[in-house]
Amino acid sequence: MTDLTTVLETTGAVGAASGLGLGYAKVRAPRVYWSLAGLPVTWARFTWTYRTTMDVCGLTVQPSRLRAFMVRNVARREVQPVPPKVRRFRGTSTGLVVSLRLPAGLEPADVMAASERLRHAWGVHSVTVVETKPGVVELRMTGYDVLRRVRMPRCIKAGPMVVPVALREDGSPFMRDYRQVPHSLTVGSNQSGKSMFQRNLIKELAKLPVGLVGIDCKRGVEQGAYASRLSALATTPDEADRLLEVLVGEMEDRFDLLARHRVADLWDLPTELRPVPLVVLIDEVAELFLVAVKKDEERRDRMVMRLVRLAQMARAIGIYLEVCGQRFGSDLGKGATALRAQLTGRVVHRVNDKQTAEMGLGDIAPDAVFAATAIAPDRPGVAVAGDTSGGWSRIRTPKISAEETARICREHAHLIPSIPALEPFRPAVLIEPMPADVPSLVKPLAVTE
Image (cartoon, rainbow, N blue to C red; front, side):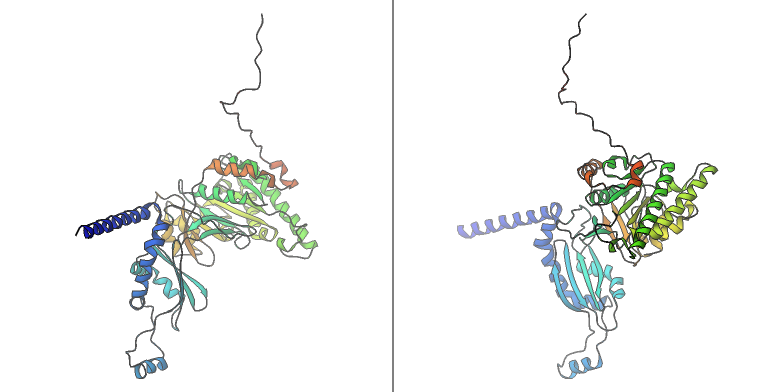
């Protein structure tokens, strides 16, 4: 009896400790909890209820006549609707990925429309449907809210002009690929995380052999801290006007270079002849459009025309635009709609009105407008990223301070390319003051009368 009591007490203590450990891991280490408990439970629920769930969600089709005949007369079973066939599955540190072969009569849009019902049926945080090839889709299930505490994957496959910026809600990194999506628009209200997005972008671009050109008409309060890595910086509308003129001239010179070598793209040139790519970072685009007096309208029209020219043609010669603003639409003035139409990538943070979300996403991914307006104010950095393919996803940028980004810019200042046309706009780098606790090297001299 004593031995049995000891065993029961030990078993109870171990069970309680395991339960407390899993409860702690669920809050503080969700990846560990998902790997130990969430993944097995979700896979068991998925396996046990798969056919019923697919039937209830309308993702089954009637079998062919031959199959129905074989089932009824050979297998002597009742003919049932046919769900998508599970081809393979794999667990990840954040969720579960299941590959499905769609039967005749179903299309990926049908599965996408039922993704919210599948999420509730299997008790996961989100279900994302991705078409991998004709007739095959992937269900990327996320077991927990990976955007609550952003942790970028350790191993990220990058390439030329490809940088990781944020984390998607399915646990994969959101990559900014300038060769696929040359120009992008980022909008968001105050305290929405728009500046954090730009910091992460500058931090990753600073490590690449590219030229960074900043246009910050708020006297450089946002981009001035990164002056050690910038090839050029304009802090007033007048400076921006002159800088855009120089960039258009640089674009024309690069087109002459392509014409001489009979190629149509910068990346087709030999490495020794290839100019350095340039990324133009515009902090608040509205400052380039709005004018206070009528005499400034001519300057505004020049800047807008040059921006539209760069957006239309500069991709081929390696000049890319990153346009940021709180609001961007036709109400800014002439040329705003023409410029927005050339910005392929769209990232919309929390906005103050539905019209702003429609300006950013309504023309490329109408379904994403509601998701952008539903972003909570207490989750800065969460955004909806879309592109002209119609796809979209929720993302969140990892938290990083301006000081850390400035430090990375200083460490990679040697990567600033030599572009003579941009030298007049090179920002002056301020020397950091000496800390107060460092002893002075100047010896004081005694004062004699």
